[in-house]
Image (tube, rainbow, N blue to C red; front, side):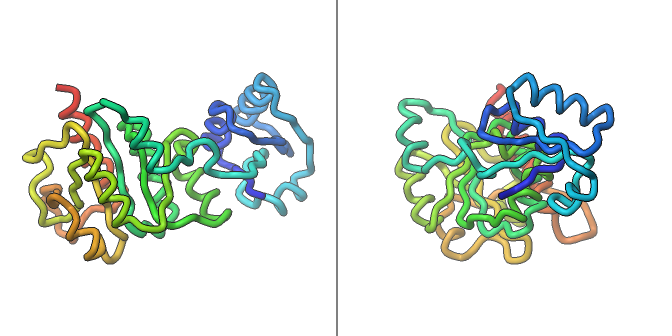
Length: 240
């Protein structure tokens, strides 16, 4: 069983309509009271509990905690169904995550994906309950809205996307400047791990590499920051 403790994570999970509850309440300040009201309006069961008891169940709580059975909920879909549902749609944006192991980075990337209307996030690894709670909090609840597909084989997933008409670009600091590439239409962006970057097999299957020109003194941007920059440019091009 997982408990969400971040205000935004709890709020967005309730708004999403996914199964959740009860909402455990030990003490409620102004912000927590707003969420209690939201829970009542959405018919989420409330349970009063002591602060000591809640600290034992959900140590990072701020007076409230929402119990959830499944962190991913209705946002989990299969890649096959996603492709089938595209139909004749020519414009679609997918993010492929290659071994993003830090749940804080994963959550921050999901928040970017929500803000820039990514249609699907594809990843390989299923995260445990502790990681899921961190992801939900770091994403400020975006995990409740962004569609995600988990697959045991990212290489095969890329091949399926290519067959569906997607152009796939891997993020690399030495890649073609992002503003010079056409990121409209059916496009997928690949982000590599925090330490090793994109794996060789995935890199070989990319149609090209995309980079973010910078003038900093350190090696590169944090992966979640890079995600935000790349997705902004992709959405800017689509807004023309």
